[in-house]
Amino acid sequence: MVPVSYYITLSAILFTLGALGVLIRRNAIVIFMSVELMLNAANLAFVAFSQMYASLNGQVFVFFVMTVAAAEVAVGLALIVAIFRNKHSIDVDELSTLRG
Amino acid sequence: MNTELLLFLTLALVAIASALAMLASSNAIYSALFLIVNFGTIAIFYLLLGAPFLAMAQVTVYAGAIMVLFLFVIMLLGAEQLRQRQSLTWQQPLAIALGAVLLVETVYIFLTRSQSELLPSLEQILPDFGSPTAIGELLFHEYLLPFEITSVLLLVAMIGAIVLSRHRDIKVREELRPE
Image (tube, rainbow over all chains, first blue to last red; front, side, top):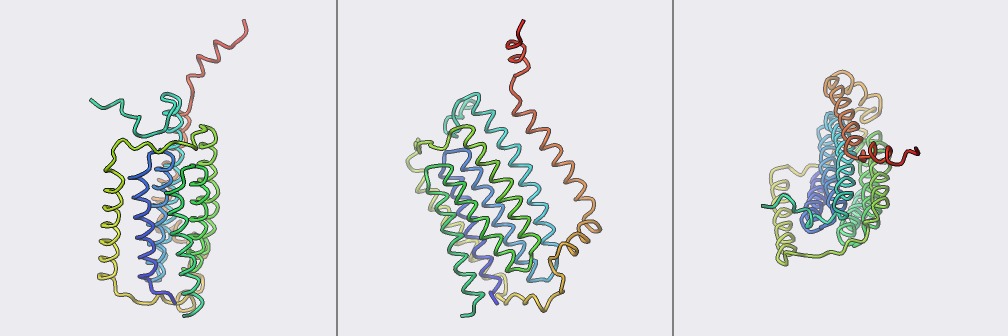
């Protein structure tokens, strides 16, 4: 069997890659996809611990995370479409209207 | 080296490579497709971890619905080729360095704090572990209130998406209306 620490390490690596994506990419949609990657990394850790302790609570929590992710994607993509309609760009560097 | 470890290592390699490719590809469509590959490998990890129902939900909800929404919006906006114009030159190396620090920190804490015990094999735990019946029972008894709140959350998200993406098309429609 695979040790649980392998799964946790993989989850940490995927989370770091997601955080890196949020930091280095300028395309708002790719930043959003990186956030999804981070959520998935957390889900993987949840499921791994759920099997380690033979408890289904972790798996139920993953369901709630999936629901929140679906809601977040729906609202976020609507926001991106609205921004694109106004500024004709989804480059986050150009969204600096609020800068004083 | 047993088969499960071999399977895990191969899939982990695919998952990390697809995540890296998602970050590196300049075309947003390719990023979305690599992310679908990544979600697929995570679904297989769920199967390995004794969560078959979650694996199916991962495929339908994440790789299916959410990524189709992403691809649809990318194609709708035609914004797949955004040139990577860096206004802060020091930002990218700094982000990579900070990411490396974060990775080392997390892995160190997890590996030192958690005793690295082997996962119990699926035969040792309950026979219906992770089955739709077991999850549904837990979801509708112990987690009934969060489950109901989730429905409110989805309703709010639905209304929010409609309100946000509504054009000022009431005005437009009146202008277009033939006299």
